[in-house]
Length: 520
Image 1 (cartoon, rainbow, N blue to C red):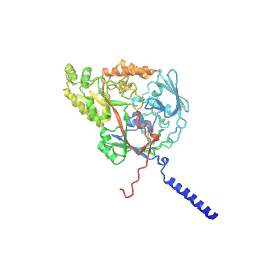
Image 2 (cartoon, helix red, strand yellow):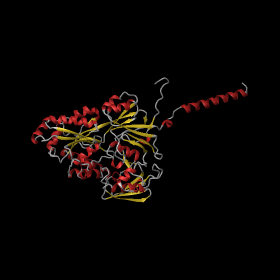
Image 3 (cartoon, helix red, strand yellow):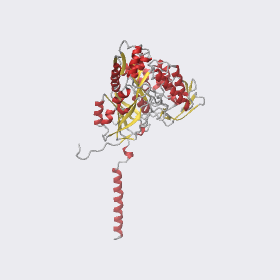
Image 4 (tube, rainbow, N blue to C red):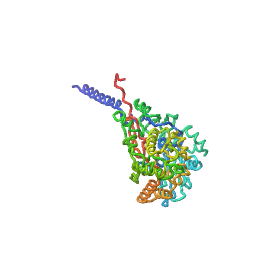
């Protein structure tokens, strides 16, 4: 072969390898190229205002905390404090001060940097509107907030506290929003336009849909995230069958079974950080006698009720904590005992008027639960009237004491702190709607939240649980195993005890498979 032919052959092979392999690389869909897309979350009910300081819905609180208006820190699944808007913090040895060092790289969605004045103005706004904010943001233990420099803020407390990072956790707003401390003005301006330091921005909102888009400065992989609201299981099934949603938290066992073999979805389980319970109005003459509350509790076959409604997604217990809580008191003090229940009712006499069982009308599980409870109570001869009310009216009746018994859940977004629900101080805040007063419980909660050592904390939590079980201001029914239905296209999501929104910045959607030629 001549030298010229050899050169031409070499060039031909080289060009073939270069362009052939290059063509393969162009057509190959690498993981980096696939990251992005839009994920859709489906929730029951309808959307309320997204202003974070007045949210009542657990899911909307999660969306606000993790996606839109975060706090300086948050709690993880192990109940540890992790940074969000800060790079570090330091507590004083006496527990009366905490210093936060802001992350200088954090920016608001309009491009302006996060600064200490934003934190100070947010704290000041909450302090001046204590009567309007959600009780979890009533920062009564903070004495003052001081700006040391543009990236350093100091909180001082009235007394020594064991975990100051938990007591300084509130949404941080841009200082430009808080040019006034007037509540209505700030609420109206919050999303017009929305400026946040979270992963996403509010683009559209209606009662049945919320559209969020990626903030240009926060680094989320998804382009957008949509929240759709469904009215019932049939509506949810239609959305799932049409592959219109990618994540549905807290689905019931019927949905779990129905989509178990659907290759488009998978199910993950996690423990609920709370419980569903009957709250007793201790100002009501019908249930103020402890023997009546015991009779109504012993007359409920909770295990059968929960098995029928939740299957393996519910766990019955009596402790006013939850099974995954590290100091959970594992006991069932009030097992089903209809004979004992009848004896107690004979001692006290039947209530002269029907019991008013308060239930929020939007929650199908609680409506079914209420019917079961009514049936068992009427076996004891206790007539029961179920009062179904929309959520806002339900809360109003609860806080004003217009009920004898109420069905409700207590679920924590962050760390477990039932002080507002059970302490005497919680009566003033409107969260202790049982009107339960106990110095022993007040002291146990104070010790549990402030003890410096683990042994002291555990003993105090056990004391708290035993006192509540004995006094019975509530009857705990069950804690749920949360089943979350996920699209297999939604990648890199991690679900644990802290919920389904603990790493949304890392989520991305795999491209939908292209239909095969000729396929419809």
